[in-house]
Image 1 (tube, one colour):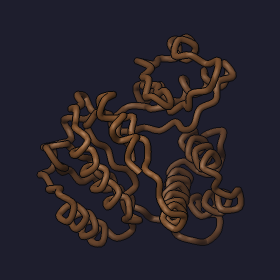
Image 2 (image 1 turned 30 degrees about the vertical axis):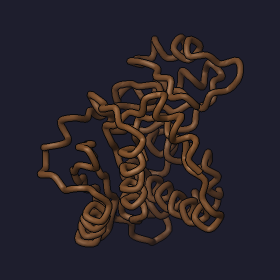
Image 3 (image 1 turned 90 degrees about the vertical axis):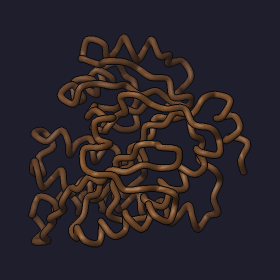
Image 4 (image 1 turned 180 degrees about the vertical axis):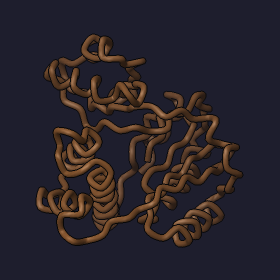
Length: 253
């Protein structure tokens, strides 16, 4: 999920955690396959593949799985990979705008699963274009906070590489760039010796709306339901959680 908030994930039983981890692996593998299909297996000429592999490794996807995905995507293993990107638009509880990005080999299945998740969890589908204008395509680099690295340190590293801003997200920072400046900004962080978790192009809301704890819980339940679908790759939302609401959510078991 991509929602620009400070939400701390509630604790789950081991089985639920394992299930989500498996789904996360599958979606990271799919990203690698699509990147390799679009730009080939040569990392030197395919920065999108570099970022997809980096993110997968950060999430502990085994190297063998990554290597197979690259070969499959690039057509080097004889397996055909043909995914279609589909974007659905909708509204969650209290009018929170949602963009639901699917990567699928079965458009009808993806549409049915998205509609079912929305209808069962307080969401509503919207007409194409009615939500998308609330978002802009941006490069987003996620960085976990570590001792000794400040927001100013990160800003100084990426400013000349075209970064627009650095946002404090509580447990980490986000560097926001134009999509074309994502690779230069990522490279600038590496050259400064600063570690990062992921570098992706995402849909960032132009304006976020503050939500209360009850609405936040409902929105996250909806997003969880959407992300349970193997076809749903990313969910973007335009909500923000104020500090006092975040403290209430952190107290949830």
